[in-house]
Amino acid sequence: MDKLLIKNADAIVTCDGQDHIYRSWDIVTEGQKISAMGPGLHAPDAQVIDAGGCYVYPGLINTHHHLLQAFSRNIPSIQNSELFDWLMYLYKVWLRVNPEYIYYSSMTAMGEFVKFGGTTLFDQHFAFPRSSPKEIIDRQFDAAEEIGLRFHAGRSCFTRGKSKGGLPPDELVETTGEVLKDCERLVVKYHDAGEFSKRQVALAPCSPFSVDTEIMTESVKLARQLNVRSHTHLCETLDEEKYCLEVYGKRPLAWAEECGFVGEDVWYAHGIHFTDEEVAFLAGTKTGVSHNPVSNMKLASGICKVPLMLELGVPVGLAVDGSGSNDASNLLADLRVCFLLHRLNSSGKAPGAYDCLKLATTGGAAVLGRHDIGSLEPGKAADLFMINIDKLDVVGATLDPASYLCTVGYGNYVDTTIVGGRVIYTDGRLQGIDEERIKQEARKQFETLYSGEG
Image 1 (cartoon, rainbow, N blue to C red):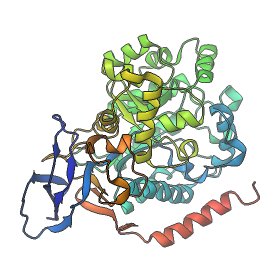
Image 2 (cartoon, rainbow, N blue to C red):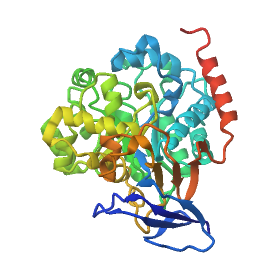
Image 3 (cartoon, one colour):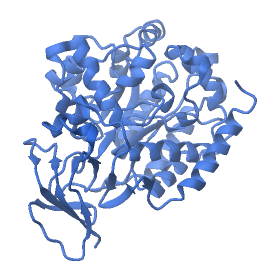
Image 4 (cartoon, helix red, strand yellow):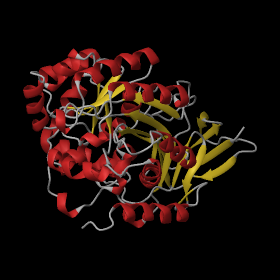
C-alpha cells in the first residue's frame, strides 16, 4: 500500500468539526486516506515529504465549472457584456465542441485548478452539437484520470432552442429522450458511489432559458431512480427572473419546485436573486447553492445572499464558474475575492475569512453530498495542498493560518497538491503527464477554433 509521511508542517488547518489547527505536526496517508496525524510520527516504507515552513490545507472543492470555456475566455468583444449577450456570442463558439476539444480544454482548466490547490471539481457540460459524437463527457473523465483529479461530471443539456423561445441555437438542442438515455449511460459507466470515489455523475439540465419543464421534471426523477444528485443554474440574473415570469408564469424557484427540482440531493449555481423567503425555503429543504463570486462580478449579475444563507443553514459551496466568465480556474484566488466582496457588502454580517475557506472545503463537500472529503482528519480522504510560507513576502502575515488565504491571499502556484494520497502536482509540474505535449496540442485546438476570428 502506498504511504506518505508529511513531516513537521508549520501549520495544518484541518477544517474539521472542532476547527483544529496543529503546529509542527505530521500526517501519514495510506492508500487514499489519512491514517494518522500527530507530532513525531513514524511510517516505515513511506515516501517522506518535508513540510517544514509550509501550511497544509484540505484540498479545494469546486462546486460549479464549465471546462469547455478554457478556450473561450479573455475575448475582447464581450469583456463588458452581461450574461445573455455574453451567451449569445459564445453559443457560436460552442457549436464547434467535440470530444477532442473538450479533452484539451479540460486538461487546460483542470491543470490550472490543481496547481492552485484544487482536488475535487464538478463540471456542468451542456454543449452537445448535433454534428459531434456524444462521447464528450467521456473525454473529461479521461482527462481527470490522467491528471489524478477527483471529478464530478454534470450531464447538462439544452432542450429549448431559439425557435421555441430559448436562447441557444437549435443546433445545440437535444430531445428529452436523447438526454435521458445519455445520462443513464454515463451513470452506469462512470458513477462510483463508494467511499473515496474519484468518478461521480450528476444530472444537470442547464438553465430556465435553455431547457423546458419536461426535462427538468424527468431529469430529477431519473436522478433519484439512479441515486445521483441534480444541479442547474437558478436565479443568476434579473433577465432570467423576467424570462421565467413571462414563460412559466412563476419566479425561478417556484418553477423549479413545481418540477420537483428541490431537496437535499439538489444544488443550484449562483442563486443571486432569491428573496429572503426563498432563502428560508432553501434552508428548510436543504437545497444547496454554489456561490460564484468572481463570475457574478464580471458579468455584473449581482451578489449572492451568502451571509443570510449561512445564518439560516443553506448548504453553500464555492466555485469559479466557467473559465469564460471567471477567466481562470483558480479557486484559491477566489477565496480572497469571496471574503472581500461580502465584507464590502455586508460588513459585520459577512462570513469571516476562515468561514470562506470552509465554503471551499467542508461546504463544497456537503453540496456534492460527500462525507469523505473536505477536512483533514484520520479516516478522511488524503486530499490536501501545501503552500510555502517561508518567504520574505509572507513575513508578518502568519498570525492566523486559518484566515491567511482569504485575508492576505496566496498568488502563486501551491507547493504540492495531493489527491487520494497521490502527489499529482509538485515542483512546478503536473505529475504523470507530458505537460509540454498537452500544451502544444491544446494550443492547436485553440488556434483552430479561432482561426479567422478577431
